[in-house]
Length: 138
Length: 81
Image (cartoon, rainbow over all chains, first blue to last red; front, side):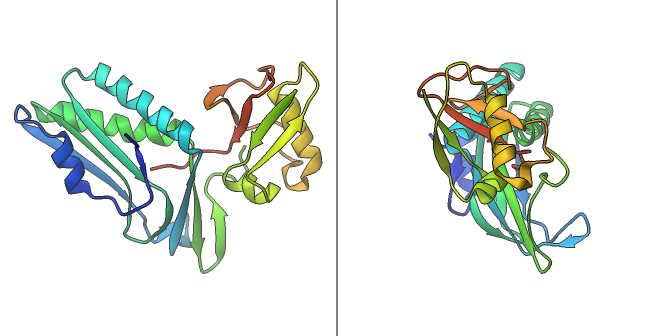
């Protein structure tokens, strides 16, 4: 199963894949493309990835979070390619018997994905385009 | 030995390629390859320290010694989500 997609994310399908009859709650997180970043207007974002490694890293994170929250059910999809303002770039669903585990697991998933998964974004706007995080860092 | 160097994101733009096959002497480290890139591409000259490194799709250290057939990638700051 792939955690990456080149087409629009169907969050409802993700929920239906994850939620079980024993669950009393699910949390859906969607990251969406906003129209600004650090004072610059943003019109679109191009997402790039080291695909096979990104798949492995997401899998590792998912397994770690499952261990930390026994009984949790998780699903995640990250979209790649050219996205415009308002598009969903990532969707994460966490489902559990009680809400606390779903909130915490979902938060941990997105935080860790943003830290280590080799996915990059190039923002495009009226002032030009730029790879996020590159300037002044390495 | 031959190592395949993959370029992603900003590094792909700078190198104007998505990969390059390198013939390297035994004992070459990932850090050595980064220094070669710095001298090859002026836009990287100021980046003394390499970014994160992946060998065969797993994070590795800059001191990791490369082996024949390895797939090496420098990982610019990630920005998923």
